[in-house]
Image (cartoon, rainbow over all chains, first blue to last red; front, side):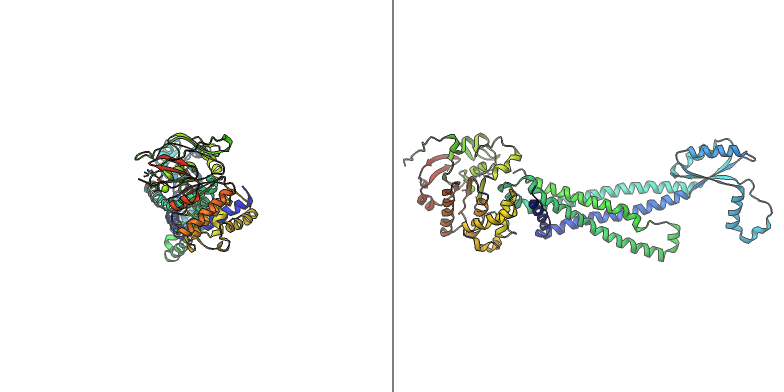
Length: 298
Length: 243
Ligand SMILES: Nc1ncnc2c1ncn2[C@@H]1O[C@H](COP(=O)(O)OP(=O)(O)OP(=O)(O)O)[C@@H](O)[C@H]1O
Ligand SMILES: [Mg+2]
């Protein structure tokens, strides 16, 4: 391709945007609407997933030992636990540590009255899981180990978190299907409008002897530009909204924000920006190719 | 009426259009063209006439390879059009100029861009475009209106733009489907005179028209279609009156 032809094509792509202003606006609005819903949904779901994950990380199973178990066996038990795939971390808490933290948490200054550690038998492992739904299986295994006296766990928290996880998965799949259906409907409508707007122009080009590539290029460039603009608008809007909502939540509901850990705007947009732009450009590209394709047969 | 049949034997290399036993049937209704045999030589000027619905536009569309024949053989400028590959069609069409009754200009571009468009498609450099477009616009008498948009022009002027666009790439064959169908007698004559002038410079010109007066006056070859059949093909012919 000649350089001048390349620049001509590029220029036509840009000019196409302004030539059919209503079509351009409709296309941008369509893509923006779809990607706005997507972005909103993504921001909510990732935060939810993050909150659940943080909660999961704090859920530990405590493993207590038989009285007077020798240290080498304790070590062995620790290694066995670490080998389990659902285990993310194991922490040993000695009797002294347990007493210190109990004192700090519940007794404060009154602790001075104790001369001996009342929690002498309280050395234990704190086992953290990467998947709380595996908790009961792990507990069964731990209880079967030699030298284990008792396993403590919080079953309610685990089942609740497991349930929330499943719910997030279902809701995600459901919303993605709905979003996808809506997008396909809106975008194919827009493409149909594009086809009728472009029909004459494409026909004229073909009569004069334009190659398919020459006919298609400006439309594809136009499509990609529409996709980029259509993706940038919702990204900007969601960025602003996210900051406002986070400010509001952290100032008005201080309790909530200490209890739940939200993602920062950067963490959300690190993924959302490339994905949205990718989807926008992809839709623009495929939409324009589909629009032009019909008329290239002539 | 004693129609003088064309008998001149044609040397193959001089022949630019050859239709042999061509039939064209649309999916619905009777065939639009039946057993059409037509040979046209390089440099000829041919009128195609006939009633509405007799198959004139269908013939032009076959020559353009907008449509394919149902049966028979069609060769235009050495291309066997029933066998030509899709990706070769652009190259084939670059040697054809086409003009329609409804002009088919790009409404949002000015006169200059409408004509330059044809040159951009065949990837001419900007330098060549700047030389060729004004020169062809002055041939059709529109040098002063190159900035106007199509809607600011009269029908006759729009058809001149279309003609300039068809000619700027110096086609071997010019096809015109009722180019004066929307024009008044004066403009019709001017367009026809331009077509004649183009023909005198060597381009083969094929014109579909309903304009009896012009056909009779110009004394060119006239091919008459009736219900999809060629009923007459005369050198220096006239418009055949219906009974
Ligand atoms: N796309 C089509 N599908 C079906 N039939 C068609 C189609 N185009 C044309 N025809 C039919 O083919 C026949 C020839 O049509 P054509 O357009 O070639 O006539 P024409 O000689 O150009 O007429 P006019 O002088 O009115 O332009 C007509 O009977 C017409 O109804
Ligand atoms: Mg017609």
